[in-house]
Length: 410
Image 1: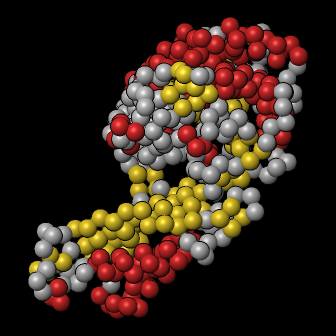
Image 2 (image 1 turned 90 degrees about the vertical axis):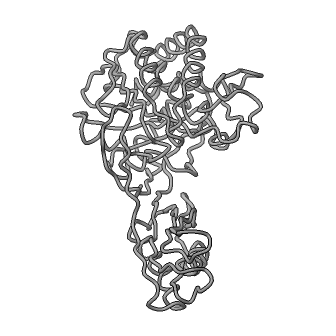
Image 3 (image 1 turned 30 degrees about the horizontal axis):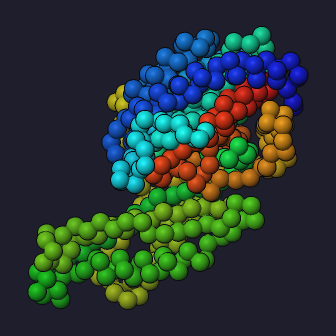
C-alpha cells in the first residue's frame, strides 16, 4: 500500500515548508518539565501540544478527562488509527553528567540535546506535524487519524491507554507507537510484570538476634534463587529470552540496632512468548520455597503483582496492575506489510522490521486491547534514559513525513 506520487510530493513539500516550525515546537516541549518519575506532571506540555494542534488546523483537538491530549484529522471511515507518543519523561538524574542544559534543547552538528528529545517528545512533535500535513493537504485519509499524547508512561506504561480504550468511544483499527526505533519498523516486544514479595519477621534488639525472626535472611535466600531463575526462563527466536531480576529491597526496622520487623523484595520480570503473570507467580513461589527449605516455618511471605493508582494531573483516579503482556505481530500481518511499504516509500530504502528491547504501551494497545500495533520512531533506543539524551533532527523531520504517509494509508 504505497503512496501515490502526488501524495508523496505534497507531503514532502508541506513538511519541508514547516521544518523550522517543527523543530522549534520540539524545542518548546523539551523545555517544559514533565518528569513523572520525580513527581512532575504533564499539564503544561499537554496544553502546549493542544495549542499547536489548534494552530495547525486539526479538525478537532482536546484534552480528555484523564489529561491525555488528542488531535483528530477526519477520514473517510469513522474507524481510527492512533499515533501514540508519551509526553512524560524520566528525571534528569545527575546534572553533573550532562554536558548541556537538559531543558535548553540545543542543536549541535545536527543533533538536538535535552531531556525527552529521544524518549519521546521527538516522536510527539513529528506526529503533530505529520497529522497537520494530512489536515492541510487535499487528500482525505482512509480512516480518522488520532494523534495522542499519552500520560504517565514512564511510571506505568499503558496506564492511560486503559482510560482511552475503556472510556473514549473510538473504534481503533490500528496503533502506531513512536518509541525509538532507529527509523525501523518494530512489530513487538517482550511483556513485563512488576511484583513484590512481602516478608514478615519479628523484631528484636540486635544484641540478641535469636529472639527475633530476620526477614533479611529470608530475602537473601529468595534473591539467590531468583538469580538462578534468570537462567531458566523461556526463549523465543524473535523476541528473545525472558529475564527476572531483583530490583529493590525495603526494610521495616525500628533502628539499625534491631532485627527488622519486615522486608519487601521487588522484582522485575520481562516476559517472552509462552510466559505470563501466572508464570512469574509460580517462579516466585519457587524462590520462597527455597527460603522455607532453609528457614522453615519462620518464613512468612506474600507474593503480589504491584498495583498502580497514582492520580493523573487532572486528578483522575484509575487503578491498574503492573502486568503488561507480551505482544507480537506476525511478519505477514497487514499492518506490518502496509507500514513497511509506506516507510520504504517515504524514506526511499528497504526498511528493516525488528523488535524493541524495552517495553512500550503496546503491551496495553495490543497485549490487552488486542488492537494491531506497530512501532516507528525517529530516535535510538540507546539514547533513552541517559545523560546527554539526543535525537537526530533530520530524522525528526523525516518521521513527520512517514507519519503523514501512514495517516493517509493505514
